Length: 168
Image 1 (tube, one colour):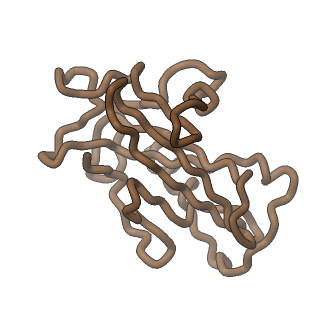
Image 2 (tube, rainbow, N blue to C red; image 1 turned 60 degrees about the vertical axis):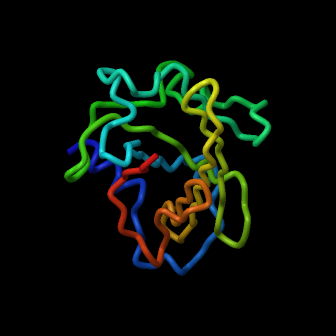
């Protein structure tokens, strides 16, 4: 229930979402959280440490640049410690380990719209995946308005349904 509430809060859509507003100084540093499961095409949890073929949580790195020089993994962690992988967790019918990412609303791309681009390496020798999170500021807060994974739009305002699963 705790994770469902967090997902609801982080992906809330306001009734007045078309009324864009600039974030206040207080809201400019407000982080929106996006959680997702990582599964194989067969539906296996690729983050489950009990599976031999899962990704090592300590090897997962998040970069802010495509050259993989700016490792920001620790900046996404509470107190700079721990793992970006949480779990086991449950949202709806999905259960397993989840990755947590933040949208910090510091990179304005248009009126009331902010974008964060992350490059995720799940193992040391793997090609990184690109994640783009867009957030929209409205008069009474903000919400995650678009999520793109490797150039595929996972959800947006016009197609908001998503089961929090990325298939890799």
